Image 1 (tube, rainbow, N blue to C red):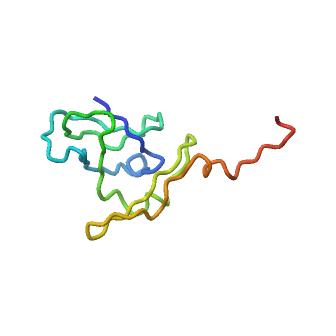
Image 2: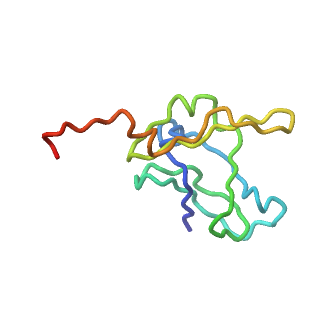
Length: 121
Protein backbone atom coordinates (compact mmCIF):
# COMPACT_ATOMS: atom_id res chain seq x y z
CA UNK A 1 0.00 0.00 0.00
CA UNK A 2 1.28 3.46 -0.90
CA UNK A 3 0.63 6.58 1.15
CA UNK A 4 1.26 9.97 -0.50
CA UNK A 5 2.33 12.99 1.52
CA UNK A 6 2.59 16.69 0.67
CA UNK A 7 6.39 16.61 0.75
CA UNK A 8 8.85 14.63 -1.26
CA UNK A 9 12.00 14.87 -3.29
CA UNK A 10 11.66 18.65 -3.73
CA UNK A 11 12.13 19.29 0.00
CA UNK A 12 13.98 16.09 0.92
CA UNK A 13 16.06 14.84 -2.02
CA UNK A 14 18.33 12.62 0.11
CA UNK A 15 16.43 9.32 -0.40
CA UNK A 16 16.47 9.82 -4.19
CA UNK A 17 20.09 10.99 -4.34
CA UNK A 18 21.81 8.92 -1.65
CA UNK A 19 19.32 6.18 -0.74
CA UNK A 20 18.98 7.76 2.71
CA UNK A 21 16.67 5.76 4.95
CA UNK A 22 14.29 7.22 7.50
CA UNK A 23 11.89 6.11 10.19
CA UNK A 24 8.65 7.95 10.73
CA UNK A 25 5.60 7.97 12.94
CA UNK A 26 2.05 9.14 12.50
CA UNK A 27 2.41 11.98 15.00
CA UNK A 28 -1.27 12.48 15.75
CA UNK A 29 -1.60 8.74 16.50
CA UNK A 30 1.71 8.20 18.29
CA UNK A 31 0.33 5.78 20.90
CA UNK A 32 -1.71 3.70 18.42
CA UNK A 33 -0.52 0.20 17.57
CA UNK A 34 0.66 -0.40 13.98
CA UNK A 35 -1.93 -2.16 11.83
CA UNK A 36 -0.21 -2.23 8.45
CA UNK A 37 2.98 -1.52 6.56
CA UNK A 38 3.05 1.19 3.90
CA UNK A 39 5.42 2.83 1.44
CA UNK A 40 5.50 6.63 1.77
CA UNK A 41 5.74 8.53 -1.49
CA UNK A 42 6.09 12.22 -2.25
CA UNK A 43 4.06 14.44 -4.55
CA UNK A 44 6.37 14.77 -7.56
CA UNK A 45 4.96 11.96 -9.75
CA UNK A 46 8.45 10.50 -10.13
CA UNK A 47 9.43 6.87 -9.56
CA UNK A 48 12.31 8.03 -7.33
CA UNK A 49 10.09 10.14 -5.08
CA UNK A 50 9.97 7.60 -2.26
CA UNK A 51 10.60 8.80 1.29
CA UNK A 52 10.14 5.58 3.28
CA UNK A 53 9.77 2.15 1.67
CA UNK A 54 8.43 0.14 4.61
CA UNK A 55 6.78 1.88 7.54
CA UNK A 56 4.60 0.26 10.21
CA UNK A 57 1.63 2.54 10.87
CA UNK A 58 -1.79 2.55 12.53
CA UNK A 59 -4.82 2.99 10.28
CA UNK A 60 -3.98 5.92 7.99
CA UNK A 61 -6.55 8.62 7.22
CA UNK A 62 -6.43 11.87 5.22
CA UNK A 63 -5.11 14.64 7.46
CA UNK A 64 -2.83 12.42 9.56
CA UNK A 65 0.58 13.92 10.29
CA UNK A 66 3.75 12.07 9.36
CA UNK A 67 6.77 13.03 11.47
CA UNK A 68 10.22 12.13 10.17
CA UNK A 69 12.97 13.00 12.63
CA UNK A 70 16.60 13.73 11.81
CA UNK A 71 16.24 14.21 8.08
CA UNK A 72 19.55 16.04 7.76
CA UNK A 73 20.76 19.59 8.03
CA UNK A 74 21.10 20.17 4.30
CA UNK A 75 17.55 19.50 3.15
CA UNK A 76 16.59 23.16 2.95
CA UNK A 77 19.70 24.14 0.99
CA UNK A 78 19.19 21.15 -1.35
CA UNK A 79 15.47 21.79 -1.87
CA UNK A 80 14.06 22.88 -5.21
CA UNK A 81 10.90 24.07 -6.90
CA UNK A 82 10.81 21.12 -9.30
CA UNK A 83 7.33 20.66 -10.83
CA UNK A 84 6.54 24.21 -9.62
CA UNK A 85 6.09 22.99 -6.05
CA UNK A 86 6.53 25.42 -3.18
CA UNK A 87 8.82 24.69 -0.25
CA UNK A 88 7.47 24.02 3.24
CA UNK A 89 8.27 25.97 6.38
CA UNK A 90 11.31 24.97 8.41
CA UNK A 91 10.68 24.32 12.09
CA UNK A 92 13.37 24.15 14.76
CA UNK A 93 12.61 22.30 17.97
CA UNK A 94 14.81 22.94 20.99
CA UNK A 95 14.11 22.19 24.64
CA UNK A 96 10.53 21.23 23.81
CA UNK A 97 9.78 24.53 22.03
CA UNK A 98 9.03 24.67 18.29
CA UNK A 99 9.73 27.80 16.26
CA UNK A 100 9.34 28.63 12.57
CA UNK A 101 12.77 29.62 11.27
CA UNK A 102 11.86 29.76 7.55
CA UNK A 103 8.33 30.62 6.41
CA UNK A 104 6.38 28.38 4.01
CA UNK A 105 6.81 29.47 0.40
CA UNK A 106 3.72 30.78 -1.39
CA UNK A 107 2.74 30.61 -5.05
CA UNK A 108 3.52 34.34 -5.20
CA UNK A 109 7.04 33.66 -3.90
CA UNK A 110 7.48 31.03 -6.57
CA UNK A 111 6.55 33.26 -9.52
CA UNK A 112 7.67 36.70 -8.31
CA UNK A 113 10.77 36.71 -10.53
CA UNK A 114 8.91 35.55 -13.64
CA UNK A 115 8.31 38.11 -16.36
CA UNK A 116 6.36 37.57 -19.55
CA UNK A 117 7.11 40.00 -22.37
CA UNK A 118 3.99 41.73 -23.71
CA UNK A 119 4.54 40.44 -27.24
CA UNK A 120 3.90 36.91 -25.95
CA UNK A 121 0.36 37.67 -24.77
